[in-house]
Image 1 (cartoon, rainbow, N blue to C red):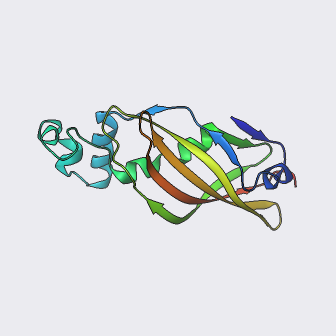
Image 2 (image 1 turned 90 degrees about the horizontal axis):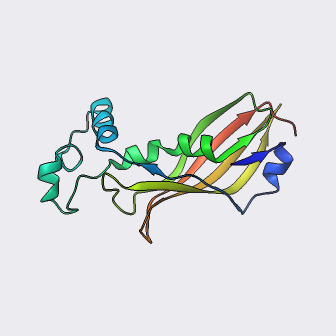
Image 3 (image 1 turned 30 degrees about the vertical axis):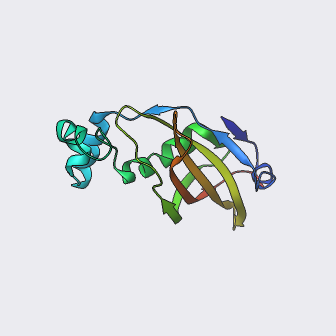
Length: 154
């Protein structure tokens, strides 16, 4: 985990890969719960038997499930000391570039693209989040994520 002690330390990392997270295993239970929460019950996700005969040979995670892991990746990948809160400010661009078969392990590479001060005591950061699947050369998701933090030292 990368620990920043101030916003100036964050700003010094613009253009750099800051963290690579630990692996997370995607389970069928996660996929089923995500389907239940979102109403997306497409067979390619929730019917393992039918999915075996489908285009990927197994059930795959929803793209939005993969995207929803971004906060978990940030929590495990970096910390800004003194920040009293952080919020998701949105996304500029998202691509699901490869499927995530159930049972796969994924992790994220977090690259800081921009850091801008927010008055009176905050910072907006633009992160390139590249989610990769173990054993694959191609990322499964690439997203430009905007995060805001408040309360840390300048």
